[in-house]
Length: 197
Ligand SMILES: [Fe+2]
Image 1 (cartoon, protein in one colour):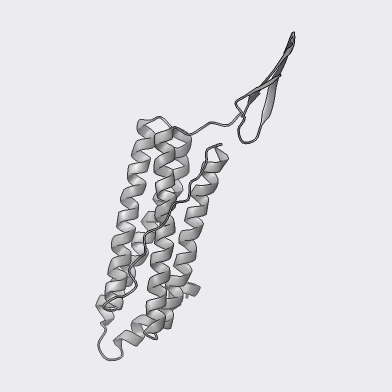
Image 2 (image 1 turned 45 degrees about the vertical axis):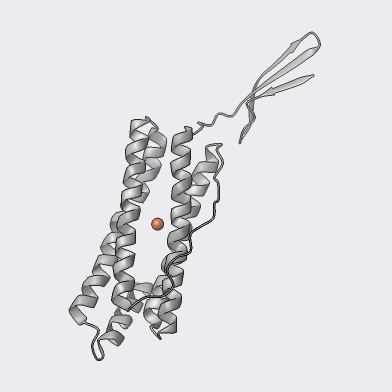
């Protein structure tokens, strides 16, 4: 009879003990498991990053339909970045021996009033994500999960950059305006951000 205890990701056998007719194999993962509450919040964040990607993709599609090519390509690229944020979390969860769970994602808005509304919504959405990341960081400290706390610092810096980026686009829209050739100029400026021009 074989009893296997503690089978998890990246198995490492540490003890093999024979006792009469029983063979007991104790296997230690050597990997720190996440606390359930931390895991649940990280999985929610996976879902949120997935939603962010879909939201920006829907916005990109709307811009494309309006002939706003610069904004469409900027938002499509940003949608890809949100997927990378999701995968980074997904990989971290799985590396700890826990399981990242993929849930259904709410449908984003598909119709917008104008380009100003699009970027107002992106800025508000990034502020919402920042709040969620901050809640997660607070919670990991409360639970003394220092490894996850450390992992999340990348997201703290990233959110600072995201908010600054979308705020700068809103400022451009305010300064240039959308009247006459304004819309064309705004779209051109946003398109330049894709190549970092
Ligand atoms: Fe993100």
